[in-house]
Length: 205
Image (cartoon, rainbow, N blue to C red):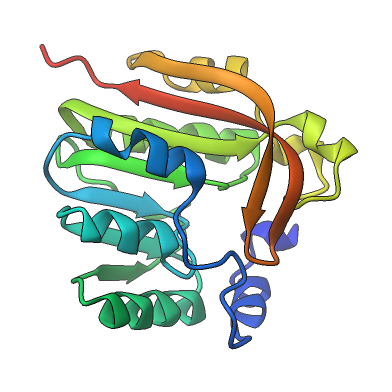
């Protein structure tokens, strides 16, 4: 099994005192946060909670889902330290049901899955959006294999913009781009990285 989708791997990684990916939100998420409509937000593979807590501080009711109970315990502690509410769900995304038409936004930051599972999870995420709701994605592309700044070393777990467009045929892409940028997030991500960024929206009507 690839460790990137094994809960024991992540429990061990998150067991250190420091936050592996830091406590500041992902840069792309922070940049597009003003474009998210008011309402509840679902953060998938949220780990130690940096993005969920950021969005909760902006007034969203946030649910953080991750397979690591250790990571989610740190997310809850971070939320308490920042004085914001946060709901957490420990679940394997392969089996996690996303209620349709329920979310103002769904956030998927550095979640890398085998393509069939990625299509399933992103399809559920898209169906979970309310009309006008937004899906925010940043993941590594296969070009990341040339860098040592983070992410899985298996090309099958990395995605291109074309892959994500194919996975999300019913959403309108407001941002869709592949680029290289510095990703400095704790010790887990540090350095120049090759990423794909998406802000896609369910049509309002």
